[in-house]
Image (cartoon, rainbow, N blue to C red; front, top):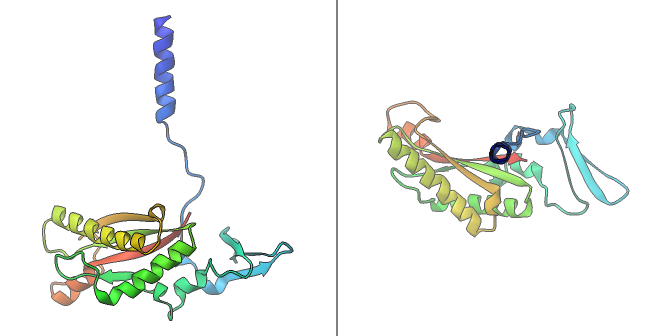
Length: 190
């Protein structure tokens, strides 16, 4: 009897620890071309739309509302098209020149609760690997905190640090290093 109880407990523990397989992949909104996005009204007043070429990506919103403004992400006249925040050496303070852009992203996220972002923190190559990973995380977290203060939800943001591992530019001068000290905003649609 005790063996059966132990066996049942072990089976229960294994089942409880198993993970579920995700049925689909995240869609990077950066990869979507706004010119391919089409919409039409149905009889219920709901605006439905999707991307052509049968790639299975679609979206919907309320007719008359502009809360799902996918086009704004790729509109070069919109602050949402800017998705990189650069930082001074050894700093995670967002410069004044980026606050308007980050505020625009916060508003967009607040208006579109189904859209999430990944904030990738990066550094230049100077400093130890551990220091740079920590600095990249502080930079990403700084942008995340700013977004949350401006109305985005914590469930919409994820931070990751790559430290010096993914440089935007390779070189040994301040011009190159300055391009690597950054946070990149990547939009995903779950």
